[in-house]
Length: 395
Image (cartoon, one colour):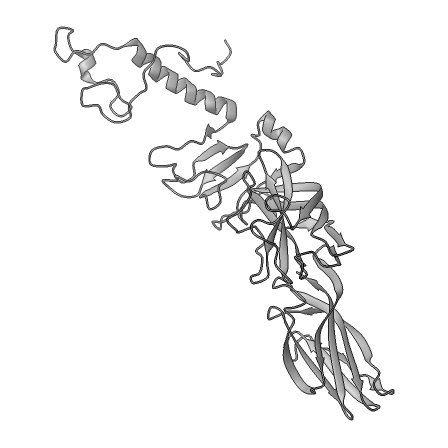
């Protein structure tokens, strides 16, 4: 005889009572004490208690329901239980398997800050599988220092990211070949592919700002956000003018149903709250030249220079050009650097024509201090004019 698979619990539609957990003061059967001695008393005893049909149906029904859950899913389906789940317990929830990281765990698997580690993704229901047609659920990184033999994706890793703004506009679109998004940096991760997503800074919600208006002459961070239940991806813009945008959306205005995210872009805005003209490929953003220095003060030693008006706090490196001129033919020297004598890119022009700017490019100057570079600028004769422009940044 084949083993029965309990898709239907015993007495599913029958008359049954729920089994109490704690000892019952009236001697009734419970999970903790089982059948009490009251059930063995003579039937003429005042405390005599017969074994009832509803009691038996309830007990066997609970047992076969729990057994069927494990038979059909491989793991118990998560639910809130008295005292929480023990350390190491493995449960099925939302198409994935989670392991409890703590004892007495009352948090919900998959929620931000939950004390569960995703163990896999092989339990998706048919509806969830259809919803995730364009997303692959991945195993998340370990957080407890244990050795792991499974792949741990880097949330935010992406390929083929491109965005182009040909004229200042509130609307744009971003494409990507593949992006890994996550529920936090250590939660469930998903790999999305073939993205072509619109964004409009004049709207709020999925496909627009997370809240409020886009900043005036500031910066917006663009996150790809993902709803595992529907398989929907969208862009979400966040004001990133005063603070650096984290790799995963950390605000309080995630649209309903969206749980995973990853940072894909940080873009300047103009005085009309629009995207400025530019082009992004990967994490490199090219912009129209932004002047950050025009000065006749000679700087023979490295001097700090704020470039906050040209690049966001997320910028890790900048590129552009240096220009020097003098009121008389002379020798000049200028440089840009990461800090002091670190990462110096030097330009030493021989200025042969007065009042003519001589220029040279610099590239990938790393920013040790956010939105700050260091520069020098001198000439040996005449009145100097030094200029520094920025044409792009990496974040």
